[in-house]
Amino acid sequence: MAIKFPRTALTTAAALLVLGTGLVLGTGTTADDAYAAGVPAPVTTPAPAPVTPAAPPPPKAASPVGALFANGSHFCSASVVHSGAGDLVLTAAHCVKDGMSFAPEYHDGVAPLGMWTVTGVAVAGGWTSSADPDLDFAFLTVRQAGNANSLESLTGANVLGTNRGFDHRITLTGYPDTTDSPVVCEGTTTRSDTYQMRVACPGFPDGTSGGPWVTDGAVIGVIGGYQLGGDTPDVSYSPYFDDDIAKLYASVTG
Figure 1 (cartoon, helix red, strand yellow):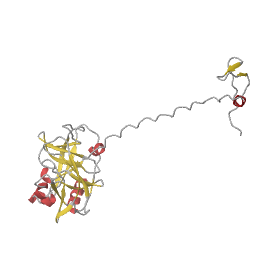
Figure 2: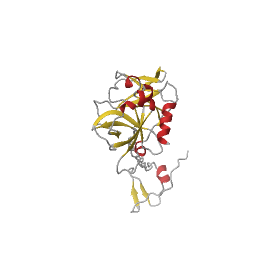
Figure 3: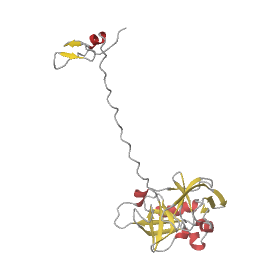
Figure 4: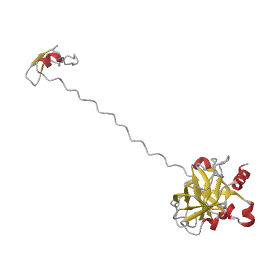
């Protein structure tokens, strides 16, 4: 049986190479000759496999949710909603007050993107005249002095979802008055009244009003409406987003 080896000559700087078997091979002796004489073939050590460096962790995703402040105190929650100018924030109408500012991505007492001053407010006429809970939503226009970037370019934004029905799997986010970081819950919405939705999510006390109800990148509600969003921290409400909020949004965005 033939055994294949490379025909590489075994030579040394001298004319002879003495192998461990005691056999002396002259210059020009081949590996085949060595094998026939009972000399083991030279062992080739494989090169080590290349090491692939570990991939760096992905960057933290931007969040459109933040906290509302007035007179230095947090009191409600809000989120960036898509607009052409990139300066629009959505919250509950019952959260509107003078001297508001918005802190996107607020956490652990830190506003990483600074404070954004509310320069304009839009609420539905029915809320202004009678505080109709079915119209408990508001759009805020914001700006930050000296910043040429739009808010949306920094945080991303949810699109406004209207007339999408009452039953959804949502992510609910809000800032309790007693903490410096948001609480987040996933829950299933149901219809609670003609123009009201509800969701059972524990841990949403005062301060979470205005927090967005998000499904598939669309905000379809905010904590508000019936009982100004709910009288217990474990069940939250929202006005149903239909043509009323669509018209208000259009009046703001043009």
